Image (tube, rainbow, N blue to C red; front, side, top):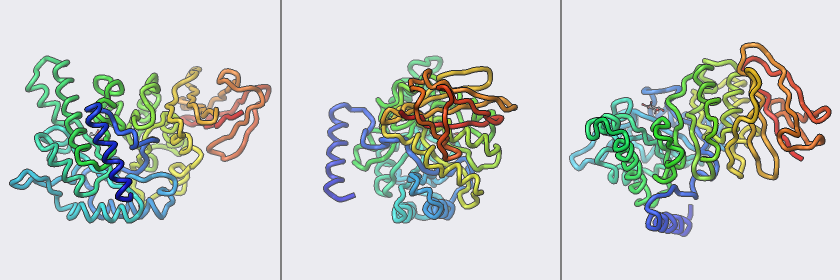
Length: 394
Ligand code: GLA
């Protein structure tokens, strides 16, 4: 970014901060953030070399060009604070600034993780009482994204406001706002990702404390049960998402090995219809052609990243089959025909029911081919736990 552009951004951020005291930066995350996060595969074992390797593969695999820009280090990078309270990395990350420089040299951005409590979920150093210092350190390291995870702050809430859920809520909301203010005071655009598992309907106040995205649920894992419970459980949240502020049903498990290809295609399709952040969570150094074809399906990614920024929702449910739709720019619509059953089922989409005339154009986004409706409806057999994803236009 040029210096003038940076100054303008800084000015806008400061003006926004002064004018509203709290509001997420609308210039960030205009579409749902895309990238990779270390947690789902590496968990506590991630190190500098893994992150560099992930950045390399994001470029060589074509993921960067498909939109996966953020390389996010999750929990366990933290070392100790020095006598002045400044946070340092641990041995796994010898030089965070050098790592950021490396990631940036690849045309990517670097994300980091902390939380409002004294400790993170994995028991590492949190930002409690050091918010300004930490935000300053992140800015000095050239960090572009912060995931801020509630964790041990819950203990503080219980101690300081026992049996008072409303006070506990106000306490931790203020803690999220505090880090937001710290982040914007250093005028570096940092995507702010709230992680508090959807408590207190975070979608209703997440933007107020500067959230560009907020987790809507507890942690995902690499099973059909958990992934589908979370994904199909996102009913009714569409109106809370939009450019700069997104619902986050957690990171992708595609390619981690616990689900079938059809299940992973359901995962990717559902997340795209939900306008969810697409943060791959697999070992990028070992991707099968099928994993790559799922993560790199540009037609499905285009649904997620559509500039209208509308989240989709369930339109119909018949037995174990569900049709979810998402409005797209230019008057088009994405439709996911999902089958949650363990046996295949035919699913019929009536064009009129989703606002289209008989002669609408249909495209199958996994087969990458145009398909045709008959007498105004399209019937297709959907495999067990599978999906047929369509784009409908006039
Ligand atoms: C929580 C979060 C996860 C991950 C871990 C790290 O469980 O929800 O996404 O960040 O902490 O400890």
